[in-house]
Structure formats: structure tokens, C-alpha cells
Length: 199
Image (cartoon, rainbow, N blue to C red; front, top):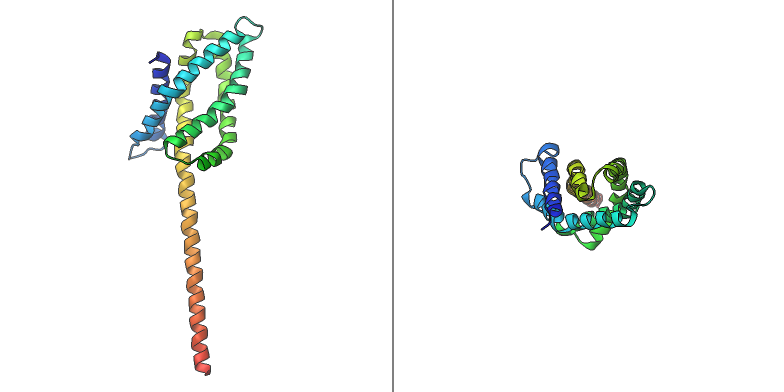
């Protein structure tokens, strides 16, 4: 297994650890969740990043404004495909259905991309200009500790918050429905009693 894959998996897992311990301040640490991030980085993210950076370096190296072209390719082509893929893969590992994945992507794609463009264009222009090819994934992964913390919160905690909100809405709906049925029943009983008195 390549150093790139190991470093990506380790730092993705680190981001989730930071998210759970420092942001969520959870008392029931979810090791399975951290394992999902570790596995994604080791077997999927790391190898993909390695191939991608080699590819754009091969295509644009030696051309005029090569770093700018690399950033445009990275943020214009790679990021809009990879981020939904990441969210979908993590959803699949949580056991979500295809429909749930589609709904999540529709809801979360724009907010994640906005956050992405606030961070990564500046990071990548520095990366492509000053960092040698063999160290670019490592440089990205170091910045990614903070980015992965955000993604962990977005992909996991935010998802739980949405589910809790839905559950609360369902409970409220059931309570209103039961209250309505109770009032209807009382009204019917009152009408029956009044009719009996009149008779």
C-alpha cells in the first residue's frame, strides 16, 4: 500500500477524531464512523488523489501558466465530481439507499462546493507552484486535517441532525393528529349526550 494511501487514510480518520472529540464533544465515541473515514482514505481517496495529481502534472507540466491550469482542472473538473462521490460513498457505508443518497446530494452539494471554493483554490495554487509532485498529496493532506473535520461534521453530524429533526416533526405530527382525534371523540360524545337529554 502506497504512502499516499496511508497518509490520506490516517489524516481522514484524524479529521473525524477531531470532529467527534472537539466539535461534537461526544461521550460515546463512534469507532465505526472513524473506520469509515480511514477505509475511504486508504482504499479509495488516497489512490484517486495519487493518480489525479500525476495526471494533471503530466498534462500541464511545462506549459504556460501551468499552476493556474492545474487549479482550474482540479477545482472545475475534479472537485465537483469527487465531493458528491465522497458523500455518496459515506452514505452507502452507513447503509443509506440510493434515493437517500440522491436527496442528500441535491441538498448538500451547493453548500459543500461553496465551502470548498473558500479553501482549496488558494491552497492548490500554492501547492502546484511550490511543492514538488511527489509531495503534493501530503501537502494537501496536511491542510485536509481541517477540511476533513468539516466533512466529517457535514457528512455525519449534520446528517444525524437532519434525521433528528425529521423524527421530531413526525412525533409532533402524531401528537397533533392524536389531539385532533381526542377532540373529535369528545365532541362526538358531547353531541350524543345532548341528544339523549333532548330525547
